Length: 218
Ligand SMILES: *[C@@H]1O[C@H](CO)[C@@H](O)[C@H](O)[C@H]1NC(C)=O
Ligand SMILES: *[C@@H]1O[C@H](CO)[C@@H](O)[C@H](O)[C@H]1NC(C)=O
Image (cartoon, rainbow, N blue to C red; front, side):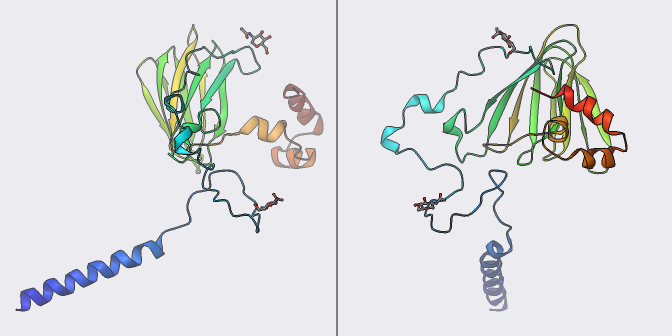
């Protein structure tokens, strides 16, 4: 009798907690940098609207953009080919994406962060110095070769530098269909942030800022 009463109580408590849980959960993660409300709109914005199922074909679930080597003739001697919801719409709302990363000898995928995703990567070819910095400015890194994997916790600044003799190839994956990338040098020196912000922050003269900015003029 007492046992059955206890069981009943336990059961009620469990149901009570389950009912309570949703009200304790946070807002869903943002899927873009911002989304100003159109107060008269009726569209749901958790990703893009869906293509009618009757128009979906096999091609929607396959992507051949990783077959070609990226063009590394640029200032960072590296190339990023994204397979995210914008290039591969089948990923919409699935919370996953990947990048192909090609880096020429001496090239770099410069310090950047993904505001909406943690990252996991695998080196396929070459030799990469892979590292990230925590919010306490602790630096973690390792030199990786083919078959080595790495992870980058969400939002932390990280990079890959080709320290080998030949080209390097890696593939990365993200737990977002559009992870976003805030590239530190471009955020600071290719944006219209006022020079005064940079001279004051970096504690250098304006000519130093001008010199660095000139490197990032397209
Ligand atoms: C807001 O949504 C309404 C309804 O979909 C649409 O008619 C209107 O053009 C939208 N306004 C803007 C500024 O996009
Ligand atoms: C690679 O990019 C450079 C610079 O934009 C361009 O001049 C070159 O033609 C490209 N190479 C290929 C193979 O597309």
